Image 1 (cartoon, rainbow, N blue to C red):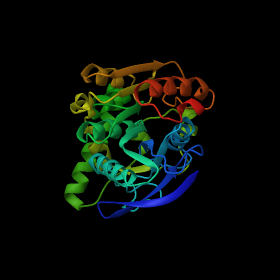
Image 2 (image 1 turned 30 degrees about the vertical axis):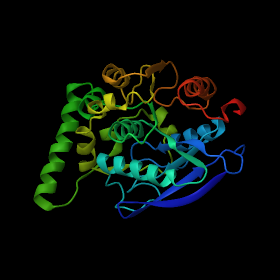
Image 3 (image 1 turned 90 degrees about the horizontal axis):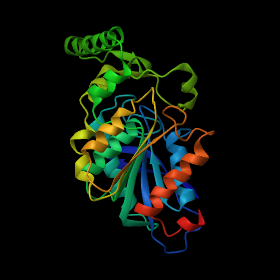
Length: 295
């Protein structure tokens, strides 16, 4: 069962879809997941939708939503700031905890890429999240960007755009806009995995926000709640080393899974059957659903 709804976050109305497993019995309160979409992405036709539908099939309630300034949510389009997204995730948990279908003590958070970084940070600063599952996330924005712009020429171009944007904002009060692919390069053949509703241009301030965002700083706080750092090996979009570095800083129980599959998109159709089995195995051990055996 899927239900379109909205909830409030800092005075803005955010658009969401609630997934409830069909096997749920009347009055039963199930464990749940907040599902965070990726970089200026969307809850719809995206990795976030695939994740939410997967969690529903595994026996969890799932809430996928558009962050402010993205998708169908309120806010000035594309004016994304990392700490605003953390606030949105925390407000999503507050909303979800009030639903009759949900066990408020067993709400986890998951996300992909940028949404994974937000998930780790949110779980690190808010102990109401009972579990965190990070998919191809990152722990240090500057280090991530350096990995995404590995040549000196590419790095100089990227930093030049950021510095020009900072000056432009100071001089005019207006944002300078840049292509999302100048911030986060994605090879042409992998762009088909992006949501068709994803935003293609961002203000430079969004890139600065990401540059200064460090889930590394709070990942250790998640323990003793379970954390899975799931990443595609040889990821050419978000460097695989980002999850390795977070694992080094995390407490226990934390598991790191590096899988050889489609770069950056582990739930792409050809890989999903195997990937889902690995994720379900982890969930069954560390954050089981009473409906899990039926999935």
